[in-house]
Image (cartoon, rainbow, N blue to C red; front, side):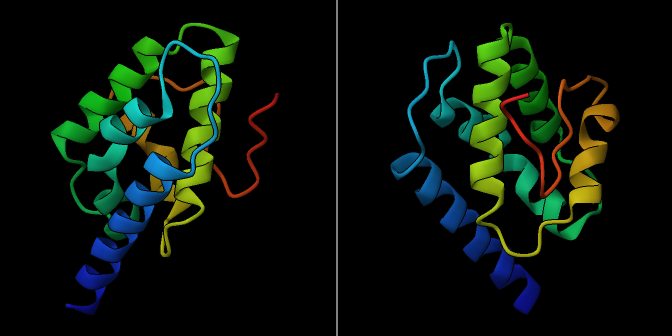
Length: 117
């Protein structure tokens, strides 16, 4: 029960932060869109288990929408800003998501990822 409460609180914190305080960048995909598409991944990133199909759909959609270097940097920054606010994130699980979902990612999400590169 406590673990569920943490994941619910983490989800709420992430969503509020990303919708209100996320920086604006010029890219073809917005941070709001990234947030919406990747929100289904939060429970897996904290608790593990089975990856929700909506998570994989979101990851593939973000990948498809990120077509330029600026897009990649913007989505990376958005993800890093949001994920850093979620207590209990398991970066090893996050790192498995692209392959598990049958896609690729141009950057690996770790606590020290530098999105400017």
